[in-house]
Length: 307
Image: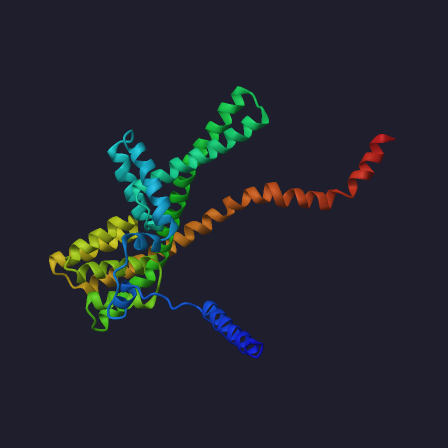
């Protein structure tokens, strides 16, 4: 019996070691039916997965802005809604904002600024007048800020289109005179530059490829941009298309007029420069100049009057 003890102990140790190894070893993962099916085909994602793939502003911010805009649209007239839509189109649809989202952004910013200032004044123990007046002013400023930003964006976009238009018409005229049609020449302009004007031309060409007539695409281009120079160019091209006039002659005349308008605009800006320089000269340059020139004489004059 004593001779069997070492054998039994060794056997028990081996069995225990085997059990430990089997326990520590990572269990084989269960094969899910969906994983096996995904090996033979593309698995359609669920609605929850599709929703989580969208960015945060699409999932949370824009629905919140639409809800706030829906609450405010009951009190706003329909004409203001259409006017806001036109302004967003002229601004190039920044961040794909619609009228509802933009109105919600205004309400959210006004409520956020007003509420923040109200909480700060409430914690500081201010009077009732300050507790009502300053948050109301902050809310009004928050409501107006998006409109100011939108107006500046429209102005910058129109300026960019006006600056790019003469060169684009020059290249369009040269391409048509070289033998290209109007649409291929316009495509050449789109490939040459990447700016606000060429993006609108590319959109117009896409609409023409989708079946829209050239006249309607040109009119839609003029409505989206609402730039006077571009409206004149579109009117001339549409009229030439209706009357059967040579497009080459029309483009040559328009190119000459655009260059003349650009020169006149530059001369106008040059004439405005002296008037704009008056304010920095009076409030910034002249005081510094007087300090440098008359500063050393001030102690001498002071001593002379004090004697």
